[in-house]
Image 1 (spheres, one colour):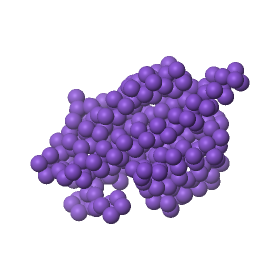
Image 2 (cartoon, rainbow, N blue to C red):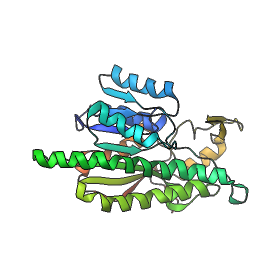
Image 3 (spheres, one colour):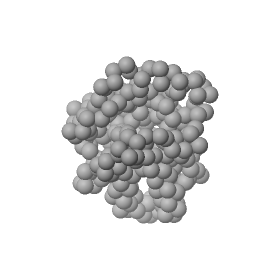
Image 4 (cartoon, rainbow, N blue to C red):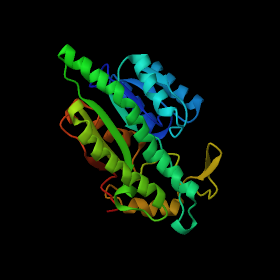
Length: 278
């Protein structure tokens, strides 16, 4: 059952062709939002947009790597040109590239900072002129709107995780970015919050006995998947006894996109079944 809570809102979700991002895009669209979806792969992004349209929603695809210097401007322009609005931004795109620090290369370090921290920074910087203009138009029309930014972090960014110095540092930075921007953009009535995920079952974290399972990120072969025995050990530590689904993760983000969150800003909630690393 949907509420129509987001009727007419314009939402941008990076990394929304697969996994949690796709589940969130579908959820926001079902609640009435008009979507700009994104994926590294053009076919995947367009497929997600078509799926939303087939269900009666509105969506446009903006494919490409969020770390590309021109991406942020293209992403925001897609929303403004297509819908003449900008209400919700979710910085979701990401992946992990793990190693212990003595074996971690500069490329691995910067890849995680570029994807998880620099890309959201650029997207939000690019969004400011559009938001400022829309806020001015709201004031002239006597309308009071609250806009939403949700930055995605991880429990690794809150409590650290062995083998993920790069990822944990980037995700910790997301918390700082959120807190700073909540103070800068409060006067614009923009709520800026963070959702930190625990174990969520996606293609990056699924249990697999294949030690060579990989995905290609623009020529980089990135190992994915978790050994089934390790997965069981991880789930035992979660108070709810299991990892989450993409739909459950999307639900946590959705909470910060609704009007009910209009007086919540600068906060981080953990979507981890009760488990944290801190």
